Amino acid sequence: MDITLYLKQKKELIDKRLDELLPADTEYPAIIHQAMRYSTFAGGKRIRPILTLAACQAVKKEKALVLDSGCAMELIHTYSLIHDDLPAMDDDDFRRGKPTSHKKFGEAIAILAGDALLTMGFQILSHALLKSHISNKGLEIIYEVAQAIGSKGLIGGQVMDLQSEGKQIDLDTILYIHKSKTASLISICVKIGGLLGKAQEDELERLYKYGEKIGLAFQIVDDILDIEGSSDELGKTAGKDQKSLKATFPGVIGLAESKEKASELIHSAINSVEPLGDSALPLIEIARFILRRQN
Ligand code: IPE
Ligand code: IPE
Ligand code: MG
Ligand code: MG
Ligand code: MG
Image (cartoon, rainbow, N blue to C red):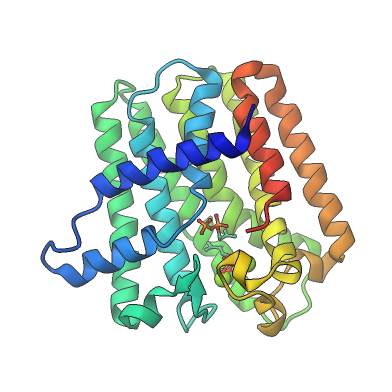
């Protein structure tokens, strides 16, 4: 399959739906809707909603409302980026090739735009699930998303990421940080696709393993790209981790070992979904893409 074309087509589909879902930037109070749209449409690979779509396709049963659920996850991800970039956190000036939200709108509106995107993510997700026919699974999904991005998930990872700046940390701590701040959101995006696709228990188990592994690999590659990529290509400032004395995978186990670890994780993720057959091809190709991506 042509993964470049697949990613492009899915991104177009997601962008079009996000445009319909987000309030118009003229809607009162306009500034918050402008800020929500600014960061959402600044660019972005849309990997998380694409994973939701691909996971649903892998078990190929029911497709209704999977697009809206994926879009909800992209809004939650965008919130996490706006807050991650704030002066009190990573203090970054560029994101998705443009000035960060606080640079463009000021800190107060950037914080509120993040809050609004997080809230709207749950609004869209719960609306989609209410309209779907998966009954009590809907509540289960909301519960799991909240858990994945809370203080024992994404937020917990962000806390330890900040608290580890300038410190010598061990492998367990960097694993905790990366699994929590990045892999937990990515793996729940995959799982939602499976649940909406009415996956069997064993299929869900395979999808979940895949999600955890590509999620961890995704953050290891992000750390590697911070060292080896260019700001132009990344759309964010390269070399920033070293400047901020961030705890990173290459910092703990070295660059070569990090590349090896990412590659191992991707192969193991592929192995876990291969038994699902041809319908899992997009998931397999997305995993390969995560390893070789340049931004
Ligand atoms: C960046 O995520 C933040 C991390 C978890 C590493 P992405 O690399 O998916 O960023 P966008 O959405 O494409 O801008
Ligand atoms: C971001 O990790 C993780 C979340 C946004 C939850 P990073 O801080 O490494 O992401 P970038 O490099 O700024 O995109
Ligand atoms: Mg960060
Ligand atoms: Mg950052
Ligand atoms: Mg990074």
